[in-house]
Length: 379
Image 1 (spheres, rainbow, N blue to C red):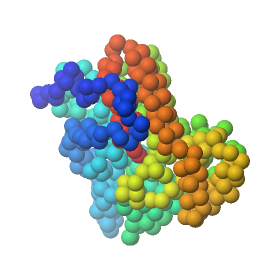
Image 2 (cartoon, rainbow, N blue to C red):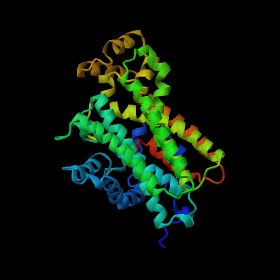
Image 3 (tube, rainbow, N blue to C red):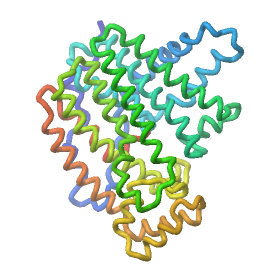
Image 4 (cartoon, rainbow, N blue to C red):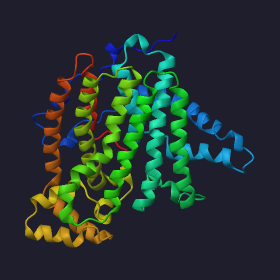
């Protein structure tokens, strides 16, 4: 049977994560671009994506008499679930990446990689079921640089809600089919259900209009919205590799929490400071008054006059008010604050990874920390 490269060849970075910043660099953005990190995972995922679509289509084949039903869902999947850029596919590439990192090298067979890919696509599909509704709640016009699904021609808000249910239930059906007989099938199903539950609860904070004074005490809980990206991905990889001892899973939780919180920091930062060509959006957090790392940090640092500008303009829903808040962010040099926070994060994560059990190879986790610090992961 075809065997994939052995684990000893898995390492992708020649330098420790904490060396990401050079002594002469005064800006995180000066770090060179790192292309192709997930090339192998993307190739493998693309190979088995048609099988994922086929599984979901087969599940509704008994309703083929219903006009347009069988044709609709492959279009839904192609538009909302998959993407050519791994930057937008963290919830698909990460479960596969972590599985390959922890699995015994002689078990990285073609059949096991196929199962890992289908598990990963199912997790991505679960995430997508939440995202397409999140776009409705946020009134988002754009997702992944194209119209949000509910804004696409021929797609109504009512159909989008039904599509969300289809994706979620379909993903669980694929998981039960493709993981049937695996010793940790129920563990993976329980884990994914829990991660989606936490994600839904965290959505309440995004849609509830909060006073600025509430932001600082609640921002930590908002960060739990991104916990699924790492906790669900890393621990499902462990389960798929039949690693289920409590010590290892506790270590992975300890790894996932700060990763998820910094992931949200990066998300918040990118939504305001990233060049528009990446997101084609204009400061939605400021315009819509969302709780974010940037505004809570600004409120801590602001003098009374700057705080007044934020309080009077944050969440007003117009571009002019957003520009005034952005000027405060610039005056407070929040880009530099973000760079310092990134350095701190790298040091914290280096220590966490170095304390992993011997069973877990450290370098793949150092590498993924580096990818997050480079802002190469998004959802």
